[in-house]
Length: 165
Image (cartoon, rainbow, N blue to C red; front, side):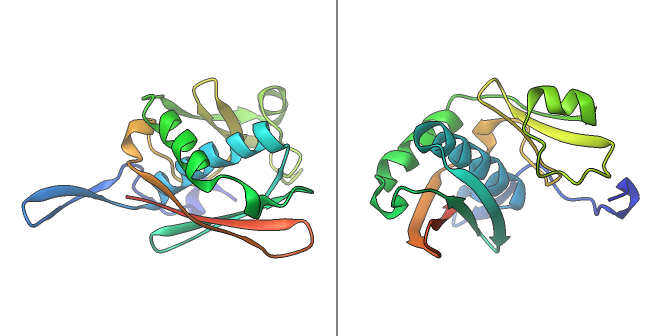
């Protein structure tokens, strides 16, 4: 998609004051970056294939394919694992690279072949993947990550729902 068709979206979390305390309102950049961390942990631990990720309001959903029953994972443990990465204060780098350069550092197999330039989002050395959506500049901007549920949506397909606070 040509750059001029992209709408400007805020990359940092919006701060909201409620009853005298400052809280973070979930936005897509915070959800999206948290999703990258969750997806990478699941890939590393279970070899899942990451499918579709969608966002609606203050929640995200990540679909993964796995021969393992993902409803049996320790969701609280994964939530803690994601939070440990978030709390590590890791810079999030967004780079637009040629298709050849991008293919050397990330799996671009799902990127349409017609794209010559690919945006790679890197969370330090932890994760690098193509993504055109907004992201935070540092993991410490994400806030508290919460896994809300895991359900089976096909014979080997699972949907994890999550939010950030």
